[in-house]
Amino acid sequence: MGIGHDDGGEKRPALSWRDGVPVAEAFGDPYYALSDGLAETRHVFLAGNGLPERLTAGFQVAELGFGTGLNALALAAAWQGPGRIAMTSFEAFPMDRDDMARALAAFPMLAGLGAALLDAWPARRIALGAVDLEIVVGDARQTLPAWEGRADAWFLDGFAPARNPELWEVGLLAEVVRHTAPGGTFATYTAAGHVRRALAAAGFTVARVPGYGRKRHMTRGILTGAAETPSGGAGPVRSSL
Image (cartoon, rainbow, N blue to C red):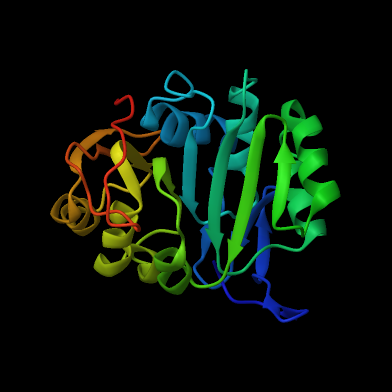
């Protein structure tokens, strides 16, 4: 996320607003689609990972780029239980609460879950309905290697690769694979060739599929082999796309 002012030791993104949508000034990129951000999230990150159909108690979602929290709210709305699932999101520059509230006001259908997020913010562990949310603050290139979890599904939601290349580096994408359970998946709005090639080289089986709205293509993939895990072992194969 874009660099902005410093607040209690954490940098906040510098924002402008376009038709009520926050835009990261550092990258000139909106946080979600100008047309319908929730529909975009459901198409790209939920459907792109075969969700909510694959969700079961104990399922682990991970995300690069927490942003406004919209993806987390959409996930929580899609999972009502039984049981709880987990989401871990890596974010370098968390938003101010007031900016987050302004951004989420565009989605009144998520108001209840949004209130739970805003009431707890800036806590780093938050209960959103039946989702246990963890926000890991810092540069993902340092924080992801130290994470001990493995994701059943990844939301790769950095800003556009041409504008925010750090979140699409080969080394970081290799860490994404290393922290994915066998049979785990990813989805991202970008269809950039170098991103697809890097994810494929790291171990995912990658597909370019129809994108949301005016965006012709997006990318999704599945880890069909047993990737190296943080503990050096391989876990059980989860349900696939």
